[in-house]
Amino acid sequence: MPTILLETIINAPIDRCYDLARSIELHQDGAGKTKEKAIHGITSGLIDLGESVTWRAKHFGIWQKLKVQIIETDRPKSFTDVMIKGTFKTMKHVHSFEANGNTTIMTDNFTYESPLYVLGRLADRLFLKKYMTEFLIHKNEVFKEVLESKEWQKYLKTNDDGQI
Image (cartoon, one colour):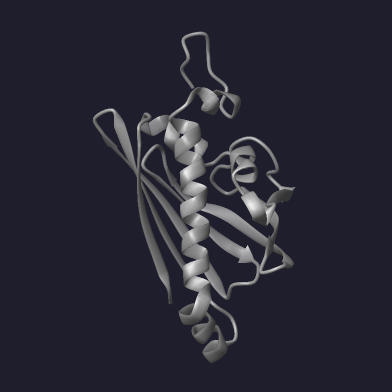
């Protein structure tokens, strides 16, 4: 089963990183060429434990749907989503956050299993793992850019003191 492990260092507080990683709107805005859109379940705001969202996106020129559910949370350290329905045979994404001074280390542990047995494993080796890695790196770059600017404020509600 392929695993993609990525680490991103973000100059922002851990609470803000954790919350923004659950933002449906930022996920859509950062989708780029895949044109991801939340079409069912939680379609705006912050997704949380037990909630699900169905995404519609274009991958490899084909419109696909992926339904995921948040199955574990440990605010602000981690949350886990798994595929309930979609193209993969299985998919699990653990999002972890660690405070390090004024920065946050965000770790993505993304595991999946392709359908079609031998053909799926061949696709993993030839292009799928590389494609998924590049997809996640792009999402993390957008995420980091938003968090390190004032743009994060349009995704999270704050009180008068600027606290989430």
